[in-house]
Image (cartoon, rainbow, N blue to C red):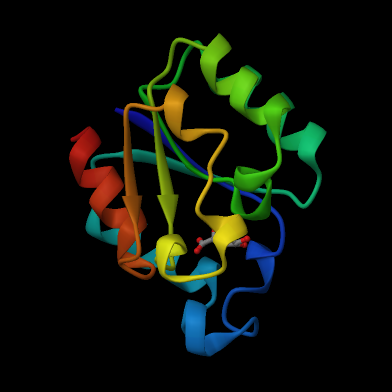
Length: 137
Ligand code: DQA
C-alpha cells in the first residue's frame, strides 16, 4: 500500500504558524509518528508553496499510488488547476483540513477540490491525516 500526503502552502510552518488554530507540532514530527504507527504502509510526504509543483506531484503519483491525502491549504479555495489535476488522475484522493474551515471565514467554506475527491476529513487537527490514512486502509 503506497500512500502520499501532499501539503500545500504555509503548511511547512506548522508548529510555528497560528498554533491556536493549527497546534504546536511540526509536520515532520507528526509524520514520523505516523510512519512508526503505520509501519506496513509505504508513506511518502511532499510539501510545496507553489501551485504548479503541487500539480506536478499529483500528476507524478496519480497513476501509480494507492491513495493521496491532500491538504491543498489556501489553494483549496482558489485553484481550478489543482482541482483539474485531482480529476485527471486515477489514484483516489482524500481532502483533509486541520482546522474546521466551516467555522472560519466565509472564503474558506468553498473548496474547488471537494467535488473531485473520494472523501473529506475536516477539523480534527493533525489527526485528520491519520483518519484519512485509516480510511484508505
Ligand atoms: C487549511 C485550511 C485553509 O483554509 C488554510 O488556508 C490553510 C490550512 C487547514 O488545514 O485547516 O492553510 O487547509
